[in-house]
Image (cartoon, rainbow, N blue to C red; front, top):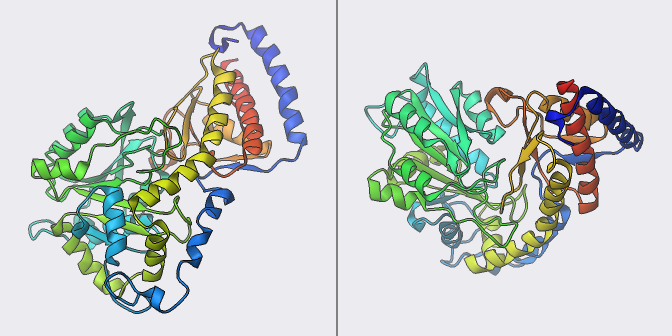
Length: 424
């Protein structure tokens, strides 16, 4: 049914039929969760052999003889730095391997700039009363949480099919020195699954910000996380910045959180020498070194970058049917009406759905009442405020295919119900 052009009588009849289905779902007492992009138990099981990779004191030694059980090596063991250099496409000398959370490293990076500066002629961001940060939307709620915590005014930037609107970004950063950075998930973006085009990456590298200390927070969390055989390709921002004489702008982040164990992976970042010297000075006071045994476990388990890619093929085998289930349900439910549109990503962890304007909160509430938990409406925007109340992030990874199929049936019914309520 074409909801937007249907008569009121037809919509009310449709609503009556949908309510019958909805009440049947509610009566089942379901408890299904599509709220966050958590790896499934089957994905976590893939890395269990890694725990057996170190079984003696001799096995605790890194390739250069360092005893990973002891203090030291602030920026991580060399073989793990090489692995992340391959993931991020950067020079191994510019890699810092940390704990289990790249989000923690992002938080620490913002914190470092809040209290100090790598430049003698720049104020710490804390002293910039009207400090601002650019936030491509829809985007990652935890990014927004960090800059919200530090009191930044967060400026939404629209996402296009090829990445953030660069016309908006170029104008804003060139005119306002209080804009100190931008959040980016450049490959398989959270939540849209969009990969930035070559042109977008080149324009990022060619930015001329008014703020000397403007930083691109390049969270390449899904660099090798394909869910189809048509993987996207992301141009190397670091290489492009080096060509443009803007090597200090990007700070790149990565982790194995959705590769091995979410709560016990390894995180890393890469930055120019200026940035790295600045950040290491802070880390020197906060730790004597991170978990080198965990770094060693990872490198022994994968062997090298090719071994890591082989491991990711196993993840794809698990995830691909789940993404297909979500997309098939959306296509079958909404292909003949105009009340929803969605992304069709080649990788990452999410499908972004735009429902009928003004109904996202209602959809989430209806789903909750029927036993399906979704990420809160508005979470993909700064301050939790989606101006059109339409974006919902679907996370297919954790439920089984059977659970996902049922959850999506309920979701589609709720989207239709909410739209009809709005229309009539």
